[in-house]
Length: 415
Image 1: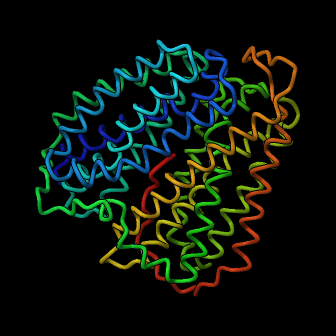
Image 2: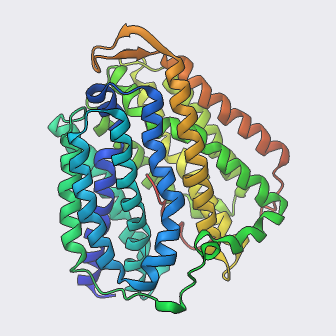
């Protein structure tokens, strides 16, 4: 791969995830402060991305891959998406805001697969080259958080303006990316192929089925973090919470380096168990943390994101690849993504919004100007769910330790 091509792909990845990080992390705070949204409405807005995750494989597999050059359709989607991000700032009703976010998510999520397609098509050695390109996506997410904190725009519509500007920039830049021509009618255009249905054969394997169910269930506590961590940290009194939350991405980058070394040494079960234990510890830290003497617990809860995500989901992608083998590994990864970030997150965002709404307080929070929350009770819920999944996993998951590890861990799809 040429150096100039590598630079172009790195810029693409940086902007791709900068856009996402600019509006997604602080959306709960924005909706509470500016729209007066209920917690159920906030959960539904985050669920829009899960719906888009379910639908996007069909769009990419059945339409985009067959008829359009990947970089061109990605450019169009980002340009139209920028208009929708701008439109989101014009909306004052939470219900209308939900539909804008849903339509935007339907445009954005396909660009994840399309950007990966553009990158892979230019690589001579994807196994070693892709992680170095994809890491710029994490850098983009971190830069978005730092910029939001530095500009003190966490609860304003400026986060959407920032994301829209980056979306316009990437939309234009996409047309300058190396050509990735359509696959034509030779591509698998069936709905089952887009979903990765051929990988259903993996579910006949008992250890993988147990893991697959656990992965869906653990998305429920995951959705509590994605949907409400920023709102919680702001209500708790942490200054510039969005910029502090990038410590989670930093820890993710650090811990992902340890996965290839640990995967085969301690076994996949222990790796997954460590991830689930970290979920419990994170929510215990959030339940008892505050902006005073227990501020360290809030930081610990954020930093634990690296273990929570990497040791379960990144390890899960690696485990899925090893169980699937080379013939159906792409379908298996698609099925795993569909089940977790699609089905699992859709269920999780619904329940997280519902439970958060159950524990509102009559007192008005000074930061949001809206009713505050009994966060200790709220964080107990994902902690108990994670503990239940942990017990289920310990009792039923039986897998050989000696599953060979790949040379390098695949980068995560979502921050």
